[in-house]
Length: 94
Image 1 (cartoon, rainbow, N blue to C red):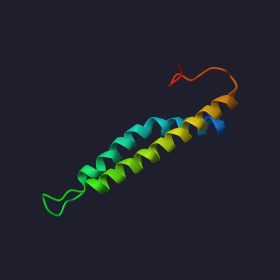
Image 2 (cartoon, one colour; image 1 turned 90 degrees about the vertical axis):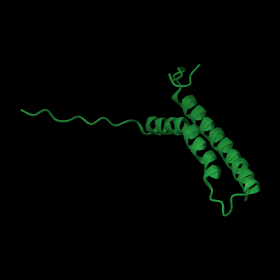
Image 3 (cartoon, helix red, strand yellow; image 1 turned 90 degrees about the horizontal axis):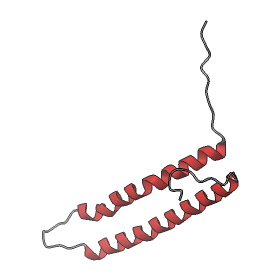
């Protein structure tokens, strides 16, 4: 007799909270890759410098990353407050 395979489903809020935590973990890695892109921009001549456009890109990306980190922290803080268990998770919990 075969035993039925039991599929466990996560609560929707728990699933979303885990995905937001995953996004918070991956954000620094994506940021590092995106920060390196100006180093790979092609140059027409060896003495051509793309410093001004590179600086605009880096600071624009920096502002975007700060905003994303702020939003992720607010979402995670709000979702932990909704849990109401008072315990922090093992990841990032002091």
